[in-house]
Length: 103
Image (tube, rainbow, N blue to C red):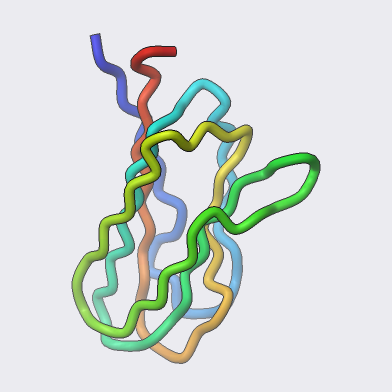
């Protein structure tokens, strides 16, 4: 049986800042979606807690209204979060889905 773990990492973010962190030790195989609903540019970093510090797993520049999908098939982390490391304008949300299948 497949089991998905769905997280909202950022919701309607309009500034440079990290979102909430989530414990995800039992999950792997992540799919991330950045949804931009109001035109503007930003850099969204997907970060993982590894060895006692946050590390960027993937960084994506967004500058148009719409959605961007990023896959991290093998990612298996203690904690994850999204961080807007550079912000010009816009409204950005970030969603993550992991699985406990094959663990």
